[in-house]
Amino acid sequence: DGRASVRVVAGEALGVRAVIDTHTPIIYQDWSLAEGGDVTLPVGRDHRALAYVFEGSVRIGDSDGGAVIGDGQMALLGAGDSVRLRGAPGGGRMLLLAGVPLDEPIARYGPFVMNNDAELVAAFQDYQSGRMGEITRTAKVG
Image (cartoon, rainbow, N blue to C red; front, side, top):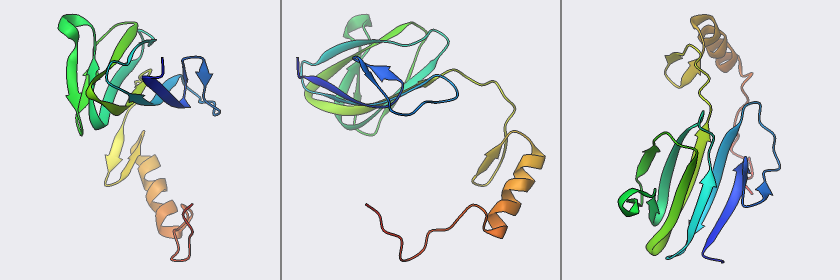
């Protein structure tokens, strides 16, 4: 009805499919919800999901009218097979992110996150040798 629109980065919503394919099933959607906008989306039961509102406010969920999530807030969504998004007074914009947990080991140090210590060492070596690339002063951002 024009009160809810989506930009699909990964996954699918409202008949729109992302142009990229992912190795694991994920949802990455940028929603704009005007006041009164109302959409219910399927989310796999095996997915873990969150919503991050970065403009205005959005009502999420069904129970007791749902919860209003405001600008700069994130909501971790509980178990289920769908999520209901509604535009709160004034509307809002949010990201809906979901994916199947990989349940892999995690090794982290500083900005690097890998699966084990050997991969951390390799990442440091790649960084120190310049193999991760660089951003130059003449780089153009479009």
